[in-house]
Structures are given as structure tokens and as C-alpha cells.
Length: 424
Image (cartoon, rainbow, N blue to C red):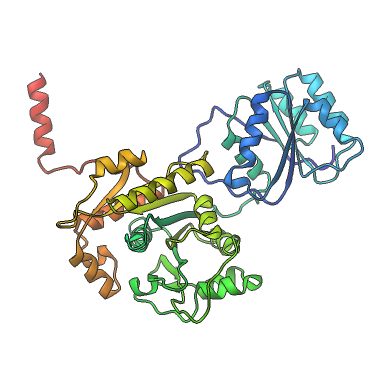
């Protein structure tokens, strides 16, 4: 068989660690030949997964025999997926027949039910790239295809965290900047904040930076963009935090195509562990694409009716477009504004069918001081509850911790001891 890659065995019983990264699948053609409706449905679901948006996927019924017939007089795609419930001899026979028609560089993935080491060795000898033992799920398949194109020894893929406001003025940018600062400082992880509001972005003000270059140079000269250019465009805020600043000028119009930011994201993912996208409250092709393509999404809302409606619409859209991903994180900001009628946090969360990862109380003095000084909340008042909330959010969105539980009190050990005494 022509240049099939080294066999990689997927064990579906192995549980992946939470937040395991899957690299986007490159622009390849994939044809699957299924025996069962279950695998056909799985391939169809994988084809619309956000990691596979560049791939061209088709599925056919008929299994290995249909694959052999299909390519007798036709060129083979980049990847052929074959499902076979046959015994070892029949599987190998079909692969030998298929090998006569495979073009150089074609990768073959076999989905079967036999967990047999001798079969593995025979598949390896024939150059099969991947053997998937059924049953497996959509993400198992997507991950397997992604890893076929992973470069040995490559750095881990950067994590994209998109922060988006349910309405304008709810403080989504402030939340994004403080999360990024907390990741870089509290977790000691290199982080980039990308301010995507080119006309009115506030990241430069919030971090007290006025860089001469920023994201506009990357957007309007995409052909020149690479890792070295990106390094020159980033403004250093601290040892582990960099800013890709918006120009915040109105000298030109910022009308973008859907894929305008793809190159920027690709370069950042290849060089930075965490990228926080500060996405303005607009609904365009590019903003939707960034939200759907992010590894984690944070929706920021205030507890009123307009925010509830918008948050519900956004969450429903993302649920449909990201069926294989974790739910977005909900942050309720400006909770408890004096004399303002509010929807209770409980009722808000019930209506949008999502628990809040954080509730941030209305504190105009603290937030106003931070904004005017070009500082983060923890720099102004490190011991505040709000600073602790952003620290918890940083852990949640990076997979370092579950949503915050109740804080421990100094009296907890005493109360615990009393409870045990009472029980005995």
C-alpha cells in the first residue's frame, strides 16, 4: 500500500484529560466507506465539527468492498476511512486490494471491532495510518484525523478563549483583560490579549499601553504575517502578558471578511499557550466564526431583560454550532446596582439554562479606579472579592479548576469537629 503512515491505535476506553487540545484539521479531502448507519451518522456529525471546517468530507455505504470499487478508476483522497466488521483475513484482503489503486500520500483509517494485537501488527506492516476500535465518538474520530497531521515534537497548541458581551457596555472587555492578567500572573502562563474592536478598543487604556503597532498591521497585511512579524506587533505588558492592541482610531473603516482573523489566530496558536480574544458586541461573519472556533467561550451579561434575551439567543446559537464542545461560561457582571430592578441570578440562569461561573458585584469605585489608572483589579485591591473572582475565572477557563465553590471560613474546622461529635 502506498505511503500509508505509521499505525496509531486509538483506545476508546482511555479517558482524555479535560481540556485536551485538538488541532484544527487542515484542508484535506476525506472519504468514508461505512457498513453501519451509526458510523455514517458519526462521520456526518464530525464533518460539521468546528475542528473540521476546512476539511471536505464525504461518506458512502458499502464498507471496504465499496472503497475498492470506487477507486479502481478514480484518484484517491487524502484520507480513506474504511469500516469493517469482517474477520482478520477479510480486512487484510480488502486492504491489499485497495493498495493497488491508492495514490502516493493517501492515508488509510480502519474502523473495526477486533481488539487483536496480531491484526494491529498486520495493519502496521501494510502502512495503515490509524485503527479505531468501535465504539468511538465524534471527538475520538476528529482527534484521530487531526493527529495524522500533527508534527512530531511540535509545541502544544495555544488555547483560544473568546470573551463576548451579551450587550454593549456590560463590561466584557474589562472581564477579558482581567482574566488574561490573572492567567499570566496567577497561573504563570504566557498569555496574549487580542483587542478586536479596532475602532474603539480599550485594551491599550486598561493596560496603560500606547503601542505604535498592533492588530491593524496584521489585519491589513496578512501576506506578510508570520511569527517574527507577530512578535514585533505585540506590546509587552508584563513578563508573561502581551497585548495585540487595537488602533482605536476612526481614520479608516473596519469592514472585515469572515476569514480575516484566521491567519492571526493560526500564528498566535502556534506560539502562545493562551490567547484571550476581546470580541466587540457585533454580530458579523467574523465575530460568529471566532466564537464558534474558540476552545472556550465566556459570555458576559448584566441581570436585565435585554441581556437575558441576547444571552439566550447567543447560547442557543453556540449550542447548535458547537455540539461537541463544553458549554460557554456565563459571567454575570454589575450585579446589585442600587435602585435598579434586576432579574435574580437564579432566575437568569434558569432562563438561559446555564449556571453562572461567576457573579461580579457592582463596585464603581474599584472598577473606576482601575480604569483611570490603567491597572487590573488585583493591582488596585489584591485582597478584594472581585480580584479573587477573576483568579477563579482564570482557573476555570484554562481547565485548572471547576467552578468556584463556597469559600472556607476560619471557623470551618471547628464546625466540622462539632458536627462529627454530634453525629457520634
